[in-house]
Image (tube, rainbow, N blue to C red; front, side, top):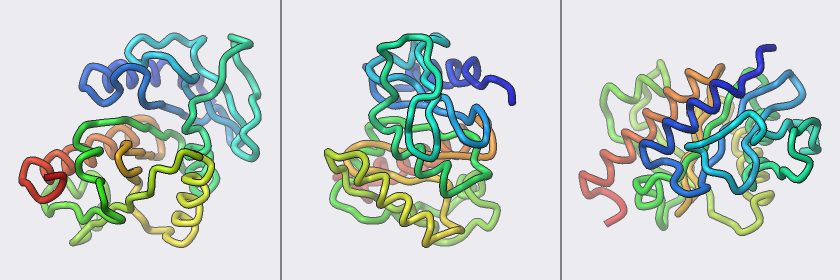
Length: 202
């Protein structure tokens, strides 16, 4: 399988420039093989990534399989990425960002009905109406969030390819990096529309 880190570096730079990964926020990952994935290390800017700032992690138990920097730790949200890869064997990439719109739209909500329109088709060919994103509580213990995400994905095999963590941000995934990016962009467009329309976060 082709090393995905060059593509992930490009995605990270794009997210940083669009205000979705300010400071050291967010993380991006893609499978290295069936049983492991590359993810950004903790505490680095996603706008200026290098290949050495990724850690290869096992899907099964989160153990580190490979890293260039012996001190590098996987991103704090690695457990959520693991939950997605374990629940969705077809998923090859997972992207997580912290936009202002995602924070505002998700406050005090357990679900987010998305506005109708053409952009829904970028998330699902079924163009369901209304399309709904689950919102998970932002626990300090990320492993708890990951368990809740895993349970949700297990119970909802046809769920949209994205979730939101309250007061935190969006995570989206896809069959490759390009599709994961498409899904993330669609969610962010719809969340921005919700906030600007005054339906949430006000």
